[in-house]
Image 1 (cartoon, rainbow, N blue to C red):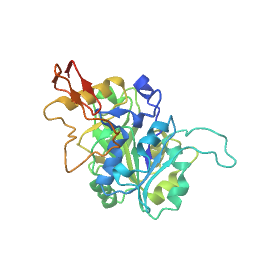
Image 2: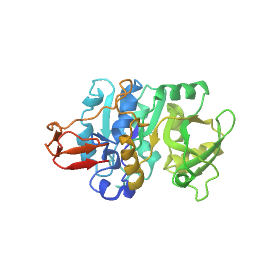
Image 3: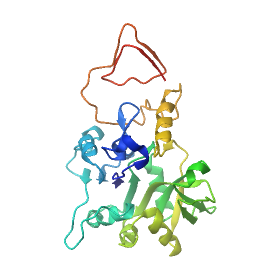
Image 4: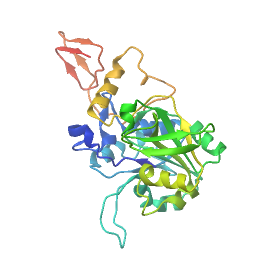
Amino acid sequence: MVLAGGEGERLSILSSVRAKPAVPFGGKYRIIDFTLSNCVNSDINDVVVLTQYNPRSLNDHIGLGRPWDLDRAKGGIKLLQPYIARGRVAEWYRGTADAVLRNRSILEHSDADIVLILAGDHIYKMDYTPFIAAHRRKRADVTIAVRRVPLAEATRMGILAMDETDRITEWQEKPKQPKSDLASMGVYVFSRKTLLKWLDEELTDFGTHMIPAMLEAGARVYGYRFAGYWQDVGTIQSYWEANMALLVDHPELDLYDKDWLIHTKSEERAPAKLGPTAQVHRSLISHGCVIEGTVVN
């Protein structure tokens, strides 16, 4: 299940008319392309995308899921928006866990034993196969992908401590004074029965409510150390830096990796064209562009 309803307020005008997962990246992609590509590259072909804020652009981009080979009769991709159930007051999702709770019927009718909860608004390349294998091996109730982050960024993330077996022993959600630089990536793998057990009207957010409640109850909550590329791009500064980092000779995020393709819906535009006086240096030029002057960095 991909959580893709975020407003992305800190991206200002970039997300004023579209959800954060639909914000363009790298001149060709949308942010959600990375999560969807991670799924299909990990042989996960049953994907549910939960949308909410300004979904039109996101819905149009994903469509039937053909660019990711998810337009299939069995499994494939489903786009779900908030709905009003009988006896409920009309309201948006109150948090990440509430979004899943309101769509629990999908989990109840699924024959899967494992459920991945993924953020649709991060830029990263991750093979979920060893992540799921670690979850099974440790017989965890939930396993959370974690990585080290600069302390300056830790105040807007879930911060945790783990023992020598990678079992999580302490959790702080967006602390003002972080005790650690080990942060949750907002990527979870649950045993389906465990997730259904813990979905509750009072536990509206995974990081704020559900994970702390599970720890307090003694549930088997583990971390999975991820050392690959991952960026939150939740601010204008981090978004700009992630884009500019693509211009170096050997970027950490390799978009040309044939073994881990990033799929996207390509618009029908003419090839990029450089005029007779054009000068281009260290730049990515997208299709449809006509360059007559100078483009640097």
